Length: 325
Image 1 (tube, rainbow, N blue to C red):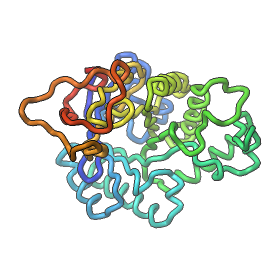
Image 2 (cartoon, rainbow, N blue to C red; image 1 turned 180 degrees about the horizontal axis):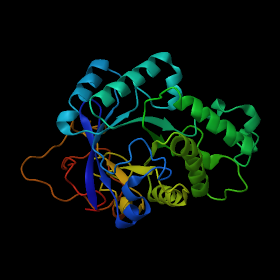
Image 3 (cartoon, rainbow, N blue to C red; image 1 turned 180 degrees about the vertical axis):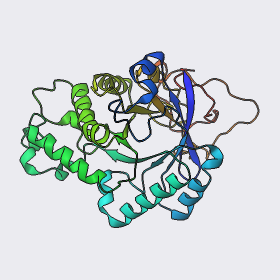
């Protein structure tokens, strides 16, 4: 059930909404932090925000300046600013991230989140941990996870004023599902264990919120990711961020029906930057003759859609998230 609206942006926002079931509310009241004594910096369940993708300072400042007028309380810094936390080792990116974070707080934005991906490419990790078959990481080696968490601490130290991390834990450099383990039997178990290691630093130690940014290109991938989220041991301080559509932001794609199966507070990511618009035989198709109230049939119930469409209707923030029509 749609509860709140969050907006993600380039210079113009891509819209997002927060959903949650009664089960979510009872398991994480108010979306609290690691414990009642040490909640994340922003523990309120109300989320309304933007994401800035561009590293254009003037444009970013304009977005932040407009935040109070639109009652924005959440800002994500991503892509050209900080795509991975390791980007912050670049002094210029670190300075820009911290400047925008401080500016956002001064503008009344309660929570500023930085993006990250895990795992990074294999070469990022010391060779002493890449002892699995074909040079994969041995996930059963406790020393690797101690190194991983210490590295995460050092990266978060570079952005001391940020309040949350948006973590993409699928479709990453060295996919954790492809690493070696005899203890973690399934892809879902590996994904969940990785999330819990990040949360042990970001949530437990730094009292930040951790947003799991997730999507999938095929139903089996989406089901695997949803199963992984169910296995995550941390019950507080973790939220989910899913796209409004399965696969990606194509005009012909349906609403994401899997989001209703996620038993955690969830942000629904809408795109108003038009990332995939015009990838067809015509530049764009935005009919104005009559409102379009229904999407095409669910992606699993029809042939694979073409790249682009001759007709369709623009995605609307008011459309109910999770609907299959």
